[in-house]
Image 1: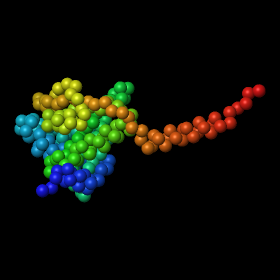
Image 2: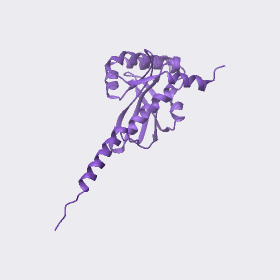
Image 3: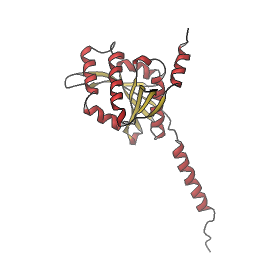
Image 4: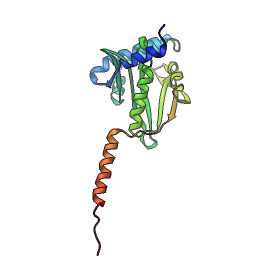
Length: 203
């Protein structure tokens, strides 16, 4: 018998994570549609699922993907997961985590957790300390288990007459100083040190 933890560990070790490109959008849409169809069946009606999948095929959905800082997870040439984030309120240092999708064949194998962590880390490196999600009903327990708390129940439009229930959730985090920012601050510190090394003498 193979232990789940061992299997999850081996699968996540096989994954290559990289930023998405426009060439990935067809694969991303396919993955999102498949994930909604399979993993959302127990939580939504057939009409709701059909509307959600139709929304994924719209031009507006593609535009939204372009504004998300999307990362993609691949096993060889197969897209198995996505994650991203967008700014919500820079003044409040809040950001939305977006597009946490996993291929149904690889559900519960650690891919969702891996991709969520990638998105959270990226947002924290950008200085955001409040992370929010609009979670579908089938995903709310996933985010609860990872420290997100319910703010309010809401709905999300999936067509002109159909609205899907979602949970607005959030968690507080500490910012992470990226290597790029660290190097920039080190250079600034070095420059200040050089400037102050030989202060002018006032006579």
